[in-house]
Image (cartoon, rainbow, N blue to C red; front, top):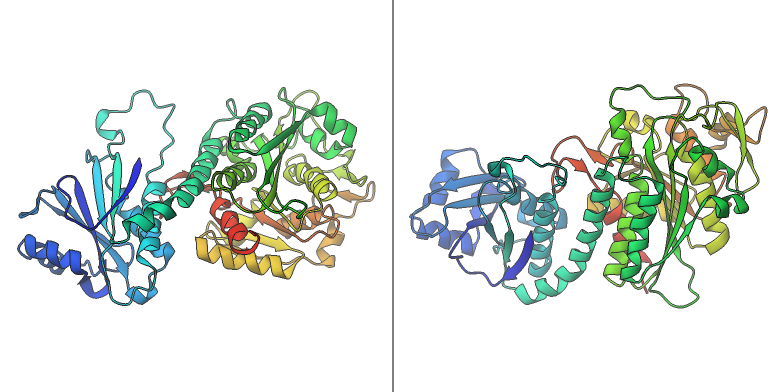
Length: 497
């Protein structure tokens, strides 16, 4: 879908949307439109329950006095409370009902409302971002979609008095959107299409954006001593990979920031096999790595002034004849040994080697890993927040604050020596699970912390936020790309030169 910006003027075709503030307050454009239609907008609002609250939308069909076949009234709430997230939502609700409506064009007027402090150009860009984000569909495998259910909306034009400034600012947001869509595409693909080698190929495509990419195969990983990662993938016909992506946009010699993603391209649980019901969802057990790949694409696309390392640990966890067994002991790259009591606690194993490799090789300012690590985090936080674990208060606070700005919310969870004792093993340096039904997400984080070697680090458990079961705000049903907007903003706000 094409996004454009234009000065405020009544469009000659397509649907027109106008923002309405709380208490049914129309701005200048809205009042003019109401007058042209003989007060139709006012009557429509008064005849229903539409009051201009944020995310409310009212459709006025066949209005007289204008060329548009329908007018949308989009609520933004109290003007003083309008934020970038409010604008995102306004764009999303405007588009939501039009994607397959048969309409091909939508114009959204960024009207003037007393009390709105967000600059007009920024407001326009955020409305555009929300509209574009909500329009996403993953339907490449649908071959018999009826014509009336196919996407029809081709263009959204945001009408603003700051059209020139909005166009300039949109370039950055468009690159972020490209990264978000790349992540959604990768996470949505089935396991027969995305597996370690094919996902590594997608990483290599980032070279076109100026990203340096290196792929470590089994031989190279074995030489480095990555027994934890290799053990997870040994039961699959698809061999594991470790992919290192580097964007060098900062000062030469400046230590990079690092992002590490769990990339289990399909997770059966291995020998500790999962129940059959809903196992198809495990195609998105690589959502952490998908987010890292999309993030690198976004940062490189907008030429971020920072040195960034992205590392993704890719494996397929299968119950083959050569699969890892419960009770096996593996030696990680760090030299620490791990007793594998449950092969379905595999994400922490691949991340153990990826984290150690990253801190030892690049000596980053910090590391943030993303992983659909535990079902227990869904029990704790549902689908509203991702779990945040960290050994560094400043990093944790920056992440949590950035989450509130971007709508990708985090909730900090504890780490403590008492939990750490729960993964001490009688047979090895540690075991990969703790006591049954006890602090599962925390235990996973404690395990990972043993491989960061004192580097400032945060672990984001995104098991509850990586996939949306229904349309929600700017995210349509399916892969959410959780983490891409969050970490792009973290870099922009705190780590770009």
